[in-house]
Length: 355
Image (cartoon, rainbow, N blue to C red; front, side, top):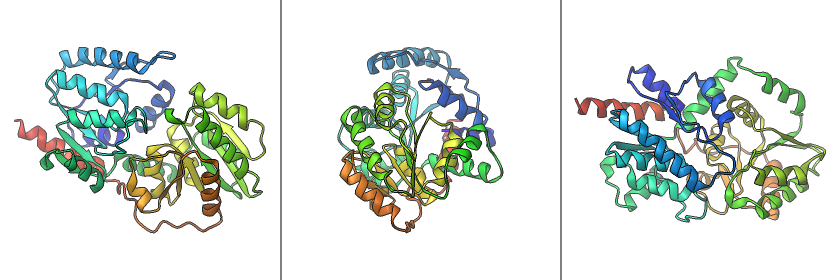
């Protein structure tokens, strides 16, 4: 959402930024990097809270904001519980809702869980849908969404990535990036690993670790794994992969440091949706450790490869990519960096249509 905020500022369109702050440290460094200050910070994170408890707190706190603020439209993003509950809260207050990154589907409500159902719920509530691709638009049309309510924009995650890459190219650095430069052997093929999906808790992450142990046997390979703080991830990964030569387990990275690290990778192994979209702009293939993906465009373009958490599939595809000179044969199917401008152009016209 940061590129949209920056474009709204540029075009002098008033807005308020609200964050729920489920991941306080991760959130604050992104806000600082993009120079954004929230108008509302709900600070709702509690240890071990259930999705239902989280949902009830979002609804309650957002209702207080909507009761006092005369918003014309509310923008929500993607497939988070925050997005679906903020959309529902706005709907209850009869406020128009626009969904950024709309229309992605697996049509399996357990994969990814709870994101797939969050995204579908947000889609039913929303009045306007900013889709990243034509495929996403087609998904919405098949669900009887009015075509006049759908605007194909590309994905704002590409806008954010390009802003970050430009800053890094112009000399931006921080202590974490400098530390990584001292720890990573850039003469080796770098495998970057991330993972956080609930459906992989338990056996899924154990299988991933098994595959990584096999891959690191190659002398010219180094694995760097910023480990998610969720105990269901962290406990398994550190138990299986600690003190293994050429496997570097590190704390989750701030946004610019992760972008720097991603740009150095030969291949990425991840269950992240955002990485599936970002990596093609850097000409880096992604092995998707999920059984389904709502980002089929990358699979069809051979930017990404669906491998699940089967160790054999992960190892075979990773070795295939590592042993070849991978070159992206298409432009990034998720956008070219102009999504925020297209969204704000719509919002400007929406604003004037109400005058």
